[in-house]
Image 1 (tube, rainbow, N blue to C red):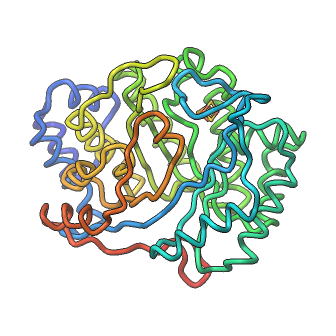
Image 2 (image 1 turned 120 degrees about the vertical axis):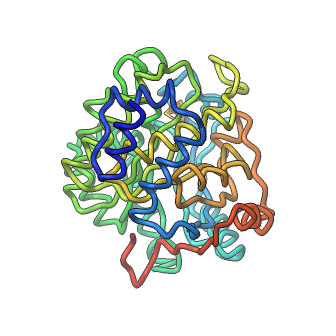
Length: 352
Ligand code: SF4
């Protein structure tokens, strides 16, 4: 079996779900690294990697979705609930620019008190104030769906509203594990897989950019992980709209379900499997946010790109730690043999 899979990869053929499962169960770390590096080299120079300095802006922590793996949200009426003003958002963006970053990602909750106008005004103001000096990911797919439903708009109309407000990106956050059973177990108010993919397709059709994400380390099975990868690969075959794939790991502290974090070794193996399986997504990203410096080892397991994050309350509330010693982190990439190159999301007004 190993030799068959090696031949397929060398011949640029796609591996099947069964072969992915076999690799996960049987391949050594070295074999996964080898195969992932072969696929990576089709679209990236082996000794180079790219990165961005970014900040996640958690504009509200009020949420009614009640995912049992989330330590961030507060229900409406909770005195710890908040909504950031435009002034507070601008202050965070100014800090980001001062540190040399140029990407912000807005991520909050399903807040029933915020109308569509709050978002459209916010995004239009950010675009007007900063122009192309920075780019922003406006919301995740899951938040987008909630807002559209709340405003009684179909996904196409909602995507157009955001586009008119200056939005260029709605990222693939909120996918976690894309199986219906996982969502029934952990996030039954966060939409089905079918709805999620329908919304993402509408976003692509509206001419907005989007990405694929995944979170591992809950209680999902290997079959569920592979199903997620398969749905992602199919979506990309159908739409070509996914700019990248980012996987990170669940942080269990202060969440309802708790649990124990998976080790970096397991994360790296999954990154490699993702690179091998997702042969139609050239940019595979590794998560400094949840794996810190060890995320850079992901470059050896097929990843080619990463963020240096300044802030993300969602994962920090659940145990993630963030270092602003960016040079130290970049040096880890250099020590592993990679030349890190800053990747601007904004290039002459054309996000990539
Ligand atoms: S993960 Fe997101 S949608 Fe789920 S409860 Fe937390 S903030 Fe709400």
